[in-house]
Image (cartoon, rainbow, N blue to C red; front, side):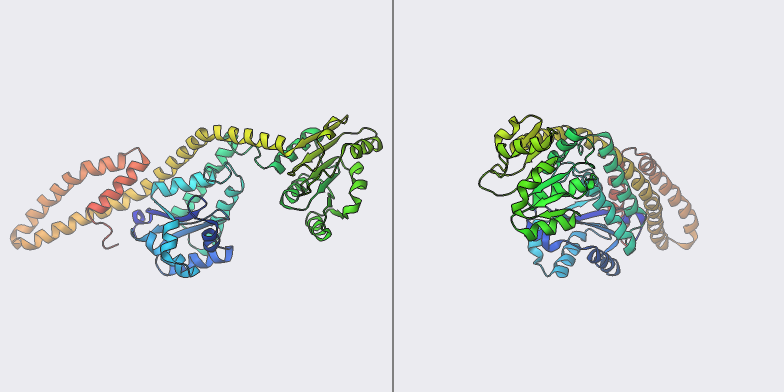
Length: 421
C-alpha cells in the first residue's frame, strides 16, 4: 500500500448524536477488546493502521483504509464481532474521510463534540486510545501523528480558552463554593447526607481536594458503608445525623426526603456548640433537604440546588462563548497536521504518476517499428516531462493542506494510481 493510500483516513463511529444508548452499549469496547479488534482488522487486511476510541458516549474506529469500501468493511466487522444487525449499525453510524475525519478527532479531543461542552475526561481517553493502538502494533507514522496532534490541539484549547474551567454539575459547583468559603479544605470536616450519585460525586471531589475522612449518612446503612469505604470515610447510622451536624464545616445533602432534614433550630444549636465558627450548607436535593430559613442564621452560608443550577447555566453560557476561539485553535492544529500529511503523500504520488506515464509510453513504443523506438522514446519522454512539469509544480507548491490532499487524491483517481498498489 502506498503512503498516499495510507493517508486516506477513514472514521466510522457511533455517538450520542445519532446512536441510542442501547446501540452505544453494544458497540462499546473494553481495553482488551480494542487490542483484539485492532489485531483482527490488521491481520484481515481491512486496515493498514487503526485506533479505536471507546467511551460511554462514543465508539469510533479511525483507520487508514485500502479502498473506499472501508465503511462497509468496518460495519460488517463490528456486526459480526457483536452479533448485531448490520443494517441497524449502518443506520445509527456516521462516517468521515480524509480531512473531515481528522477534524472530527481534533474536535473530540478539544471537548467540542462532547455531551457536556468542554469536558476534560475525553482528552485522556483519546490519549489512552493511542496507547492501546501502540500496544496492538496498529499505529505507525500517520495515525501516531494524527492522535498526537489531536492531543496537542486539546491541550491548547484547555490552556488558551476557558471552555473547561467553569464546572457544569451542581456537585462540582457546590465544591467550588466550599473552597471559596473555606479556602483549603484539607483541614475541614465534610458531612455528606445521602449516598446516591450526587452525594457520591461530591464526596469524591472532597477527597481529591485533600479532605480526610468525610462522614457519610444514609437511610440505608449498607449504602453509606459502601460509599465511605470507597472514599476512606466514616459511615454513620441515620439516627446519628443530629450529632454530626455541629462537627461539620461543610454539610452536603442530596436525598429524596419529602421534608427538610435540617431545620433552623438544629443549625442554631450547632452554631452555639461551634461558638459561631462558619458553616456551609449545600442543598442538592429536590425537594429541599435544608430548610430555606437556615440561611438567616449568622455566619451560615446556605445554597440550594436552584442557586447552583443558576450558576451552571451561567457557566454553560461562558463555555459556549469560548467555542469560536477553540474552533480556531482546532483549525490551526489541523492545518499543521494536514500539511504534514499532504507533503507525505505528494512524493509517492508523483513517483507513481511518472511511472504510469512510462508504462503508457512503453505500450506505444511496442507498436512502433524497432528502428524508430529510440527516437520516439526521446520524443515521448520530452513530451511527458512537459506534461508533468506544471501539474507537479502546482501539486508540490499548493499551500492549502486540505486542497493539497484533495488534489493528490484527484490525481490518484484520474490516473488510477492505486490499481496495482
